[in-house]
Length: 110
Length: 114
Image 1 (cartoon, rainbow over the protein chains, first blue to last red):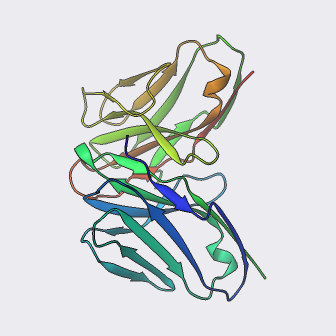
Image 2 (cartoon, rainbow over the protein chains, first blue to last red):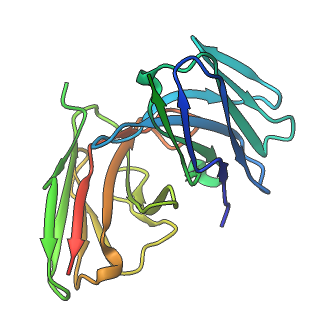
């Protein structure tokens, strides 16, 4: 079974702070996705990274795929309360099945 | 746009009871998935259906069965519910199995087994 560990598990910060969430595995993935989930809803895709070393930016969010395609990071600049939620990474491996990470719960307060 | 619809949204069962969770998508997607979400464990794949007429086991299939009724509908059945199956269940769909297309999720079914 491919495992994806996310860190930190919980993060509580104030508006305007920066943060980084990490997603690590011992397995190689063909690509990796990041999802955000809000209470009472299903996850929603934020981004897909495909190439080792790839960096993608989505407004204040920066996603990076590791050179070896085993890890990824999500950096949020100047966090806002609207960024609050559960962030999940998901690696795409054999048979294009997704393996989800353990999740990082982010709380941004005023 | 309805997307992926799951019913019911909440359910409480007694140990040993059976029930079926329903899922329907209106996006003409080929692939459908069932996950369970437990605290600190992310989402774990129970079963999936790559296309109409096919189903395959995921990471945690024991205690569950599925039916791909047609292209739109994919149901999950608990034959004899156990407390360990208390969880939030998500259904998802996507266009195909290849590449990195996004999965579209329903809003979940919160299931408690006493």
